[in-house]
Image (tube, rainbow, N blue to C red; front, side):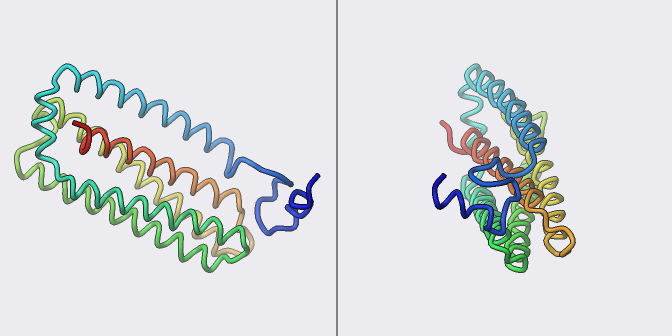
Length: 200
């Protein structure tokens, strides 16, 4: 056993013993993997439709603002950065800083939802709704389900915040579990952004 491994148990973080460990709760990882499989099926069906109606999808894609899509992406990437730093602060035994970073991450998530609501309102105002064509059917389906996941992620971050706030709890597993879910939400958006806004 190395000196690093011998000293690991003395660090104020995971109580799962020395060496590497899977962050968060195992049940959350099962949920995350299941969710990724479901979204992967959505993405495959999207690609099949896109292949069959390439010109329609390409023309419809021009109505989306890449600038708004980039802003959404930056909001979630920044949020994930805050959440990741919050986990490190919690591991280092600094709950006050971890709480602040968790709040910053949550605010970025709220900004994401606000931007998406603005984009939906703009598209609906232009007459581009769910039944307009297959591209917009997928647009509203993918972004709508994803926004639901963001909202659920904000609930998880709120739980993390109140766990850190209460000295009786402060379970590292709960902090890591919330971060695991939030990073999945970020990953899913990156794929959705690439499919809907970038891919030609």
